[in-house]
Length: 359
Image: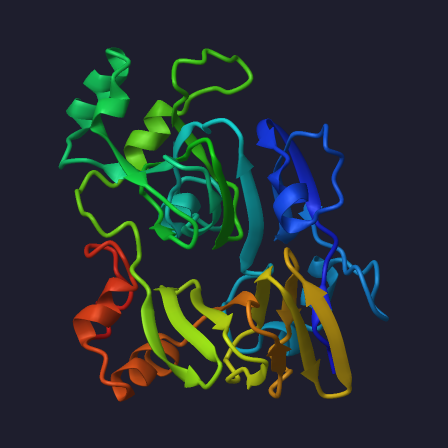
């Protein structure tokens, strides 16, 4: 039986990167390196994660997926590669304004097997940090093209103040940008199909724009549900539990320990990933026990049905997985008396809301 797995990070140096991964998450990175991204669990392209510990040390995630698919991911997803990509983003400077296609657009245009829906959990934010998500009013293609010609696209963009603990949901088609001052934890579809809409007039030949592609896939509708409000629910004594986002690709529950206790994770149809944001946790399963500290992402194979997490007060972690939206999200929250409208808000964009289709 596959045991819980931890992988070697894949570090990506970027001109806009910083050193927060070392300072805040204890990553083994030179203080002089400008690391913009740490890919924690990836089965994408040539950036394949390798197991860091245990009897399978050195095994590539792609090989594990091909040879142990049922044990690893269970009944979740139908992809030919591991379906989600987990990363940290450290933005010392602002990134370009971008947009991603959805699955159907990517496949029909030959841009790859998958589009890119993603979400951000704000691990750290300097005072005054903002993100871009969506437009600040309904716009047309003509509005966008005119603003690009006049170098005034920022006038149309929706700038959102963010703080530690915020979650922003970025479905495919949402124009967005990571701005300076933030350390983000990102969960996304396994894809890197990115169209650069605007680069703050940098005029860098190495960073070309993709205006035609961006206009073809961008969602021009306006809404104000990019930031997902947490939905607390009763979990067990000593742990504060909150749903943070839910869509057909991923769901996240946040756990904050207020007492020293042990919590058994509910079995899911898919693998689960435990992201340790603070403190130390012990994860135990059948013939398995190990301790992990902040910054670690532990992949729990779907075959592991009795996983317990033990921690002391102050421990803070996220648990994510590919959900059965009715059984994992809607039904449990309804049983606790939480309204359908509150549940619906976990899916963000009211026009592209996977939960709305089931409520």
